[in-house]
Length: 340
Ligand code: HSE
Image 1 (cartoon, rainbow, N blue to C red):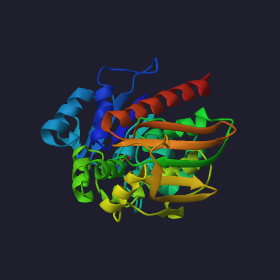
Image 2 (spheres, rainbow, N blue to C red):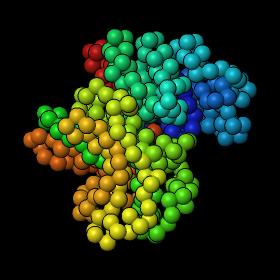
Image 3 (cartoon, rainbow, N blue to C red):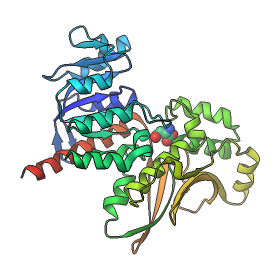
Image 4 (cartoon, rainbow, N blue to C red):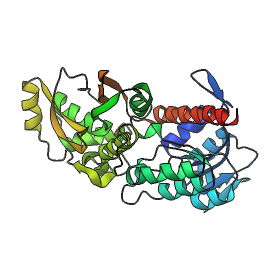
């Protein structure tokens, strides 16, 4: 598989580290992605014969941009220009989430699908704004759009709901979908830290969005909820359909009172009876969904299977890159079936 990587922050770099040995095993299935181009905000590095991932990582570390590569560097080349120019089978789109207009990720995904590249993305913006239209574009062009890392990092929240619970009707979903706010609320409850101090700690852990107000105001959770609603519950929805309230107004006093009653204040995202909502709620400490720290948890109410909960780390460079590997392996398997 020839792969183009656009976006080279912690997830993109973790992905290149994982494949730097030449191949990677996804549950025993070996895949050997050949990275032919990497783009970051300074430009791109391109070699259609295949780049050496270790060299790309080293140039990024030393110079700040992959475009500084003395032989294959293309300073100033944008992701979109790169996509129009390069030959490949897959785009790995890992630029940061922008929920205003989804850009530049949205244009990258559209252009790649039009060029009949499969797309793997961890960028929530394009999907929260336009998932149904992008799926249609992928189908029209006969390629796959995969995004399992957009919700839960490496924890297979989407796959559990869509594939694991296949055969059930998903009647509702409730979950903690944002690690940053969960960490903040946990520190407020356990150490009595004020919100802004706990936020600084969460930022130091590297979980917060480039713009942390996405986390605090519930928008990151709302994006993930929309992706679950579309993909698992087959609702055609977008970000504007979610009623969102963040944690900025949660006080230490509220957190302490909840604690005294065996509860925790959690930022809960829910899709019940067609209503999409993100808001702080009191959750019993005995509820399996009541996880602490940076963990994510989702409970699906499935009929007839009943309630099924998945818990795991919801972010992190290598955790999220593992979802990219999973998606690439599935693209390979699916493509092999089409050829067979
Ligand atoms: N800012 C997000 C979080 C990162 O805290 O969960 C993963 O999407």
